Image (tube, rainbow, N blue to C red; front, side, top):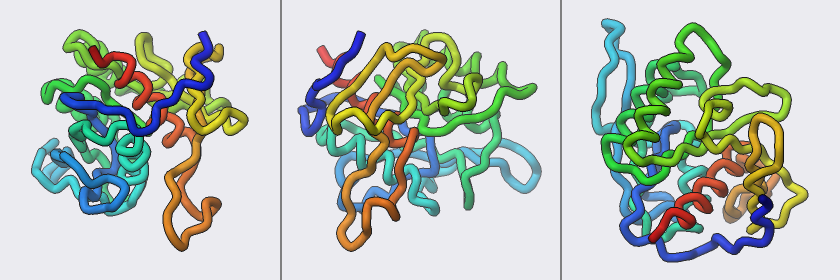
Length: 220
């Protein structure tokens, strides 16, 4: 079913909790301001998985994702789950823990603008997704058209998303076929003094647009 032409920008979203498992969020950013809470999940020097409250974003990726979500969901509460440190590499165990942490916080939708190749730890992510879905969360994850088995986007019940820049800004396609059936534009919000081509774009931001649509569709 194509959801082309659905207007998702700026609708009310009271009482929605949106989990954003990513590089963190800079809550002071003008595109994000609002109710933002969160934590960081990381591996300490002893190799143990730990959690603290340091969810600021040292990279900017999660903040860009949150900006797209905030434009569509201005009154939602964001739960930032930071699972990256200084670059865009992480461990499947941290992503799995992040999904579980967002579900435990009661998130209605969990946005995963990330993709991991299938590995020996794939079961951790699959089990976490099942647990989150059983807790009532919808999971939306970024895929890639050239890689059909990315996690968690290729898992059952997860809304797998790829960017389609032939769509209009507010168009969402939910059954486009292939391993990642959801489609949206992969464009960011505009930043002053920064040309669009120099900003983040692609499947991660398309994922955020679909997550906003899913959140609004689940609203009573």
